[in-house]
Length: 624
Image (cartoon, rainbow, N blue to C red; front, side, top):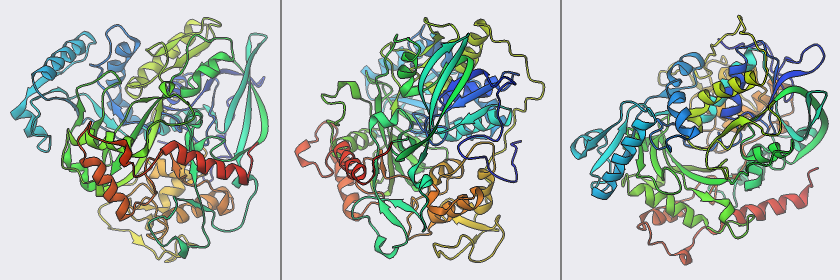
């Protein structure tokens, strides 16, 4: 089980130091998304001294945070590619991983849906490709069986390729479980460490990292802190003068370094510089991996981010699909899909927008309307009956696609002790445990001597406590300044009404083996603020409650606790949609695909709006 202590981790790092007696490490891993965390856990099975450096304010803040959470089977990958080699292998490792780590995994199965004879031919091609890639249990199902499995599908569907081995997870919960278990087994993790340079001295890599902290932490203020929302939020925000309102957008370049958890997005202040010496380096830096590679003189690839936007609907829409539903794939990937999340919400997306094709890399050529229309109209062609009025959240991720067109898992041509685990886009989650095995093999080929650790503990306990309705739970009055106004036990005290998260679960997450000091980090571990109200201050005040518990546990003032950002990467106009917003979204979803006229734009350009907000913020304070 996980090692839950009496107090939280020190600021921005694990409790323990993994360095050897001379202060050096065997392996430094740069990046703690699904790939870096999987590699860290695999190395924690050995006696190697390992450190993970993460540029953002928490693990799993990059592409891992913003994707579909699908464990693909691997039938779509080009035969002979690294993807094809590792996807199915990784897929088959997930049931055991979930038994050990309790991140939540469901074998939902996937369906690639065809409409007509031409698309049915493509299903046959995918079937043969899957067989070539070693994928088992694939079969094509015809209309009658298809509609027994998926009664809410668009009625013109004629057949589908069924893969029962495709699964669903929550990607950040998966990566957190990996990183937490790695830390439990001796891996050192430091967050808010931005790698600046890498040099080689006496057979050791010398990594210089900037240690930053949010300005709100460095310059502690009194009060309850910020909540972030859009202009004219749908609710009585004026009733909460003790909460400062603000707006925080995120650009593509920031997404490469942790998005809403990056230094610039958090108005980060440099508090120190650190030098880490290691014999081996693993580059698992996602969208920033080409920059890390260039630091050792290896410019053999470039990352070309591909943006994918999503719309999330309430759990009352989750019944509209039972499997992961794909259209027949096109040139930009697997297509815009419909899926029920592990927690029962309906998720629509993603788009596939290549940033390197934009005329101006700093300005999105597509408006919010165009993006929303593309997602919603595409998904209507698969499942026509979802209700856009139940939309609660929108977000995007930047896939770390490379100009090589395949995953880059190799020893650097410049230095065999520098291992690349880069350019890993979809199906990277599925491949991640197999990628970790491959990277460890490469390290051993390069000379890493790491014996099996007899004390390795593969088990990690879940943070979530199953609830039986509202039995044993107490919903207390929202005073904004008290987390337990009824004085009940922490196990009874509900701090997030929508997801029934208790104070005890927040405390448990605070005292695990990774540093947790923001409501955003807590959302990813406990789901506090993930429900239908999305943390409305005028509903139950969950973000205020959680922030005060995190502050209490970490010995902080409440405003020092990081908050959920807005607008971050959302394509919604506001954090909490008004009736007018919902009507406009409904209008966009009802326009048939291909018939949208941009002149009718109702929401404007997403990035220009975000940039305006960033510009306003930067005039207030200039980050170092």
